[in-house]
Image (cartoon, rainbow, N blue to C red):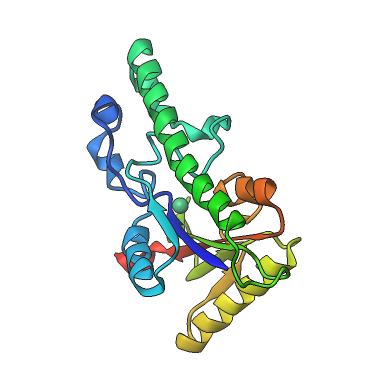
Length: 216
Ligand SMILES: [Zn+2]
């Protein structure tokens, strides 16, 4: 089994072509990136030494790496603030950046599937953990969950890995409130959903959603 760690919403940086589209105060908020996710991700990389890892270098307001490119929400409403020619140019650059990010992941996945490892056929070839964070208050509602574990409930191996992760968190931090498929469904449009379709049962894709209150 090979471990892959990713952090799609690590950064709130913008490329020069898109800088004037987003107000500076928005860039500091959870709209622009997953606050705190990058520091957890980098610690995990050091600790777990995955066979492959990558993190987004631009804000999701430029393009959301965790959406299909054909999904309208891949591109934020801030494109509307630009004149048409600038917006078209920025979108093309964003698409290239998105494709490059996804291609690096798919290259690794392909090589992992080909490699002759000692893992039994029943074991997954790739376990992917995507590290994210969520805002503690949304539309005035406080979210009391500390950590969400997102997976596809119809996939037994993902359920098994999700349980192991939950049990380990509870063993280390008994007071931690852990919920499955919260605050989002593991089956929504995203990187894991795409990889499940492409790879099939030899892939296990789990997203870890951490409450941003830990980073305030
Ligand atoms: Zn995220």
